[in-house]
Length: 223
Image 1 (cartoon, helix red, strand yellow):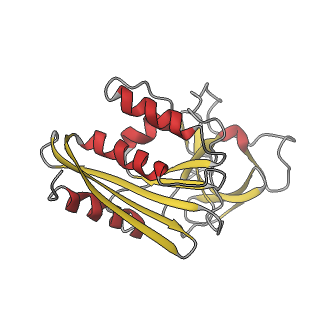
Image 2 (image 1 turned 120 degrees about the horizontal axis):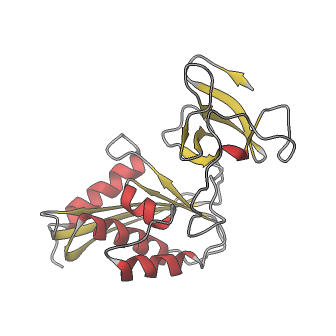
């Protein structure tokens, strides 16, 4: 592995070279057995992967696991076990930026969705009536998935909702909004290559900022 001065080391994840977050001693930073990686250091979003899937650059997957700062822990499987970090430069990827907003929580709610495929874009701004912010976040994701006509293409969904990400990727048990969560989980199974990417809200990510504006403006619309 190679190390630079910014807290990242160069390692291998599957067939790709990635940057892995480390502490001041060069040990991989771990959260419940998962490490933080980037494909490119300048990109705005990051991914969590199993520490045991990381390898030094001079080895191939399957030869020897990377040494980590913690022992591997049992990780709850995601709803879609095929989910893995995407190639950020894949031109055939459908990218969906989904956001929800609520005034009053519960109160008048709206969703914002920005879909991108190659040079094509589509915006959706829709009032969904009375609801909570969590319902709006989930409904935005469902709306985005329903807009995809070809589920064989790779799809990337960008969300700043830790609630939605936990339910749909980390396998959290839904205590509320169970019917909506179930509908999305069933819908997810249509796709051959579906990845959820957790982004930080209001951090200047252009697609996410546009989705946020679409959602907040939808609150003022008539349901």
